[in-house]
Length: 298
Image (cartoon, rainbow, N blue to C red; front, side, top):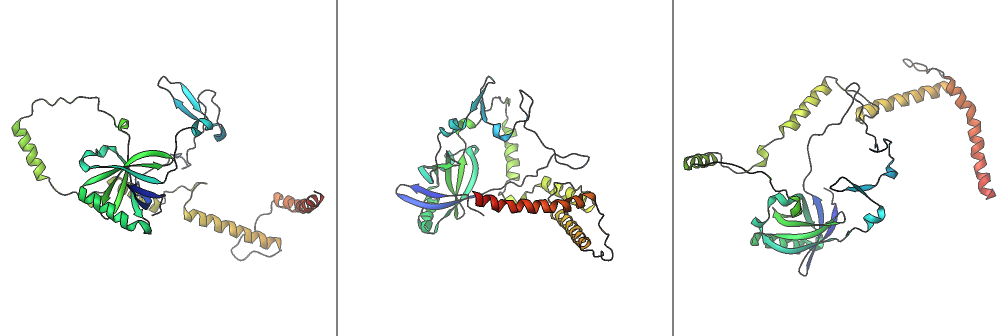
């Protein structure tokens, strides 16, 4: 793994230099939109909804849309005035009971690795969290924005989990009408829960969808159902193209020296553009000679 951030955990007068690593990665299956006829990738243009013209990147700005649909364009100067921070501190604000943190607030997880000089205070913080059965609520600046997070222990490692802001958790706007629940029904439901009770083992569950997609793709490859496009990035296609280009270069070099092609080789066809290129060669040399003269004159 590669560290994505370096800083220090501070609580009281104690500072623990640490490295931050992404603790998760997505293995979700993704597809590209392509032309069904030839497999070419679909491109999208940046078209202005008002004048219908394509807009270059240089003319694209950030806009904030108001509730009534009006657009406020923000300039680079406006963005520069927004609050930002480059602090490298993970500041512990308080230690709270674990059960008080709603899991819905958790957003992204990171592993914290101590620097060599912070190994002992790291171990002390880890042990304190375990024995107190609490999480440390912290503030940290990631991507120049301050956010809240918690520190908790997972195995031998301290994990930092960033949290969403309270107003980002939606409140359900529907009511559930259950009617009367009978004691006998509750008893049967408890029996079902007890029957299916067990420990959570993540390895018992598999991503059947990703495996099925991989099987379909593999079958198509083995069946030769592949469409080579100019944008293909597969190694096999690059090797074939490179070998073909090298072979053509060798044949052209032999022909220019008056050598006969080897057995099995086809002599390259002579084309008019090749002659024109030969005539233009002296002009290029002349242009090259003029450059030093110009430098001396200056």
